[in-house]
Image 1 (cartoon, protein in one colour):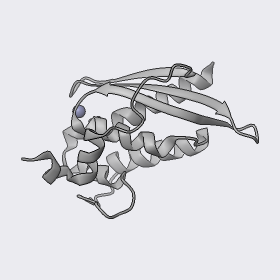
Image 2 (tube, protein in one colour):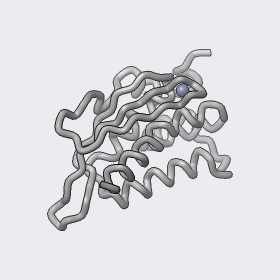
Image 3 (cartoon, helix red, strand yellow):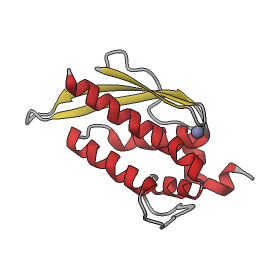
Image 4 (tube, helix red, strand yellow):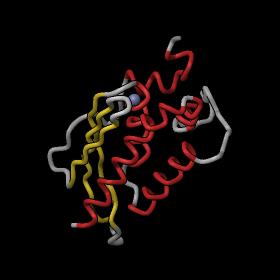
Length: 152
Ligand code: ZN
């Protein structure tokens, strides 16, 4: 079974050409995530600052990792969606994605080549329950990192 055929062009492209890959030397927080079910590892660098109105936001985010194609594609898609977002917006995105993957919503859009939003391509992973944790790992790691940075 070819990965491209099963998960579609969007996930294959993110897996092959990861966005925002790398280490951020001046980041505020590095958060590591691990999914023992599959062996996925991800390390996310967060640079938090404040916008002109004083609200905290994620100025920049990069990541590195080693894992399956679903986890790596998910991290790349996430990294494109979260740059410059406020903490509140990020919490909303994380929660919405978690709900999509673990909730009772059974609508699968796969492959979702022309939805206009790459993240919808990940919803199809729900057809493979053991892989849901792979798709969620970057997002739960981001959540942990934001909470840890905030607690300081
Ligand atoms: Zn995995």
